[in-house]
Image (cartoon, rainbow, N blue to C red; front, side):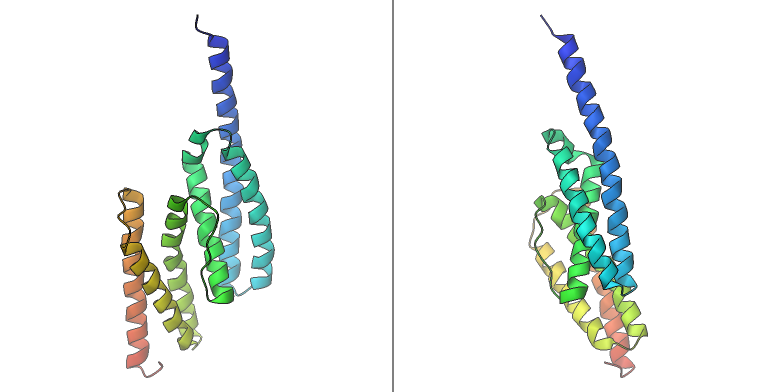
Length: 187
């Protein structure tokens, strides 16, 4: 005999946990945006504090996602983790000049990494305006490396392929910026 009560309870539990996942995902998204904004403003001390907070919130989010295998496929979770990756990578790159590996699913890492060049383009334009043109070339070289590495993958996921295509356009913007700086004798 079918135990409808048990099935109903399982579905209600999943829905309840999914709501928790959505709420916690919003917390991670909000902190990701705050980290990026702080880094753009040059407030690395504030960004560091936010990084500590986002790490705690991500742990809570991961705990909720462990409720079932389906949770890690929920859209809110995927978006939150890719934004987390983008924010942490951006902070670390601006602070140290290097990218780091993060303990997230490979697909989520690649999606966040593919968003990073957009922030780096914004930073390069800001730096060029401030006359810090050497940093612009370093950013262009890093985006070129990211794009080159992403091209080595055989992505079958449309979301990832679209994001990798956007990296190509970000690289082109940086190449144009570096060329413009060279033509003006600033680089």
